[in-house]
Image (cartoon, rainbow, N blue to C red; front, side, top):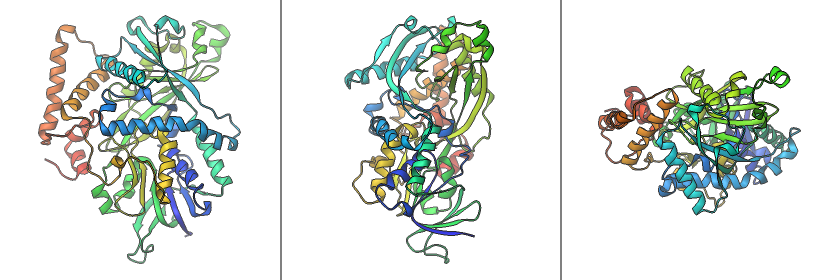
Length: 489
């Protein structure tokens, strides 16, 4: 067995973990920092992502009127402003081109629910009030958007959200950390103990053991390994009692390419090769909506499914991929009917049991979180990692106090707003899977949805708290509820 001692051990080697180590290396000796994480990053959210730098397209209705949601949005806004500078710092450490391509089209179409219209209206309102450049376009002004007739586009909103290849970002981080002599350990952390007991570890610190048997003592431990961190949290009972549980935000995507015969023989509208911006819907059905990211030369990324599970599932569900493929061929361009596909994922977005981030030092001194960021971790990572590094070395920082990891669950809006969101989310999701109902029974259908959701609130005796729509099923399931919240009703 090999033993190591270090000042800071970062557990997790994706955007938040590597970013935290990189920022720390600017404040302290690089040899006092160790990063541990498996090189294949199996199940990691970053490598399964597009990855879009999403700020404005991800806004939810009422975002800036709610303190927690506003703080969440402001982190992504600040992160977006830091991306160009960060890439300048790390781009010299990669052979592959590393740049952000700005520009995204958000579409409303006949497949969308009233919830999507409401969200897009809210995005336009907020961008207008904050003087953020945007344009409303007619559907015919973007020739390579060629959906089926029954998925006709009603409006296109052009916004400044962007994209960058996450795999190249992670490689650049790794190279930069090696240049700075930060140690990267290709292993998985599986055990953690507090020091001062049983001769294992030293008082005031922590000892972490890896899958291969390596033991590392550290004064500070950063849990930046997404949902995988829960197994470590469970080993520290005081931490488990105080911290919202991490759930598995499963998501899969597809790498899409046009076959060579299409280039040679044609047979489809050639405009499909001219797609030069991200195209996406707003969030729908609890997921991040259908979106396609162009890589050039007829190569694309199609994402992404989304579902929050209590246990990780090793492969995507058929209905998730069905909705993605349907969106690709019917909502974006019918020419994708002839495309080739490869599965990417599943990746597990870290979703806390109140769906808000876990950031900063816990009630156990020396245990830090860069976690629970759901779909915002990559976008907000330049801000989160910089501010977290400042906090670890004792400097003034700007991490939102509301997201401290040792806390009571944060309500998703008000109870009434959360129930309304859950009804619209369910309705929007089921439309994507083929739901068609006559307009004269729509009201009855939505009322039945509301009654079903209200029963979950009544079952748990919840009066003054809003459940995020994506985790209503966690509250409804007796086993999941008991293990997530420590009691059942």
